[in-house]
Amino acid sequence: MVAGFTIPSAVQAGTLAASFGVFAGTAALFMLGEVPRVRRDILQQIPGLDTYYDRRVAPEDNPF
Image 1 (tube, rainbow, N blue to C red):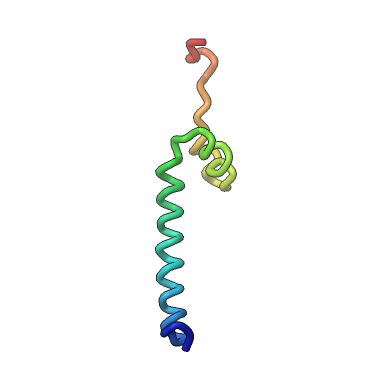
Image 2: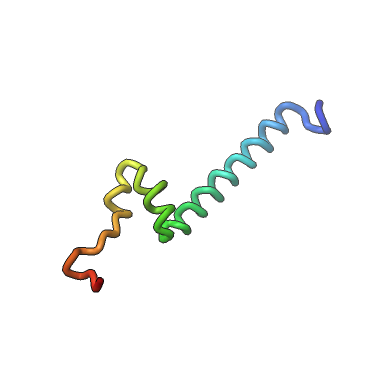
């Protein structure tokens, strides 16, 4: 028993905390998916999502 936690309760609390952390990180990553730097540096590096997050503008549609 350390700091009032037994090993089974510590494992249960750690599993719950890890679950919330993974959910929060995934949600934040996909909410920030419209930020060009996040899209380019993180989301386009995931296999299968690289073409989904490719937002290139065709040269004939570019006003500049």
